[in-house]
Length: 335
Image 1 (cartoon, helix red, strand yellow):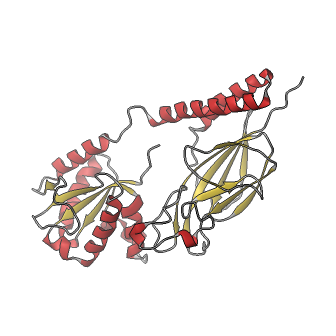
Image 2 (image 1 turned 90 degrees about the vertical axis):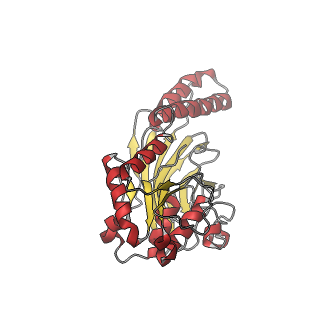
Image 3 (image 1 turned 30 degrees about the vertical axis):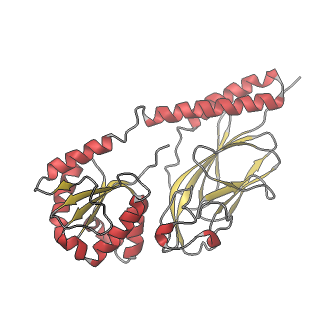
């Protein structure tokens, strides 16, 4: 599945070159292209660590970074810090840095062989090129249709497993219900921000749905019994400390090289990604790490659903994960 970003474009620019960024930003806005330019977030950023802001924006919140380079840019301290973050993230993402050259000054670490655009007071032209590049990322099928098809396929597999495990043809009608229900449940999203960890059950004719916010370790009141089927979906952002990049429920690589240190010693579960959303289905069961397309399970023993954040020191964390849980109770077959 494609990752969702808050911004299409994040500007990296020296203060002296701000008029260039503002001109391009104006054209982007006219094309409904979302962007981050620090001058438009002064109130939100006031009092925050510049390193924290830089890490959040340039390592996970934007599809592309528009780097406006010049002789001024390469000699500015904070522009240099931005450049380090951007280039570190760019090593892991194809064509992440979009360079706009105000002059011919070379930027340390930035390859001379990357295609760039020259600034010729051509904001409209540059915005048009960016719009075309973003259009290339759009999937051939609408996202909702992709999710629907994926849900049907996944639920069909689950239904077959249940049918095979029960060994009774009478359970085929239950499997069909699972197929239709799960197909549409994948279209549900958790958009409403919660202020606590209280679980809210939402009953339907064929399943139970629970919404909760995870900011730390939780043992829920969701009872699971052997033979039940459960699906877990999550989104949101969490920042685990001052130096760790913000991440989604799948976590951040524990050997993240851009922060210059291993995060494995700070993990509760060493083999999982740092700050990942983890869960298990009873107090003595195995822990599972959230992976977006591998999140449906058949329960093997009775117990209560538990969650944890894979971080041993959660006192300095900020943010949260929105979680939605779907449970299909095992159907009793009457002979």
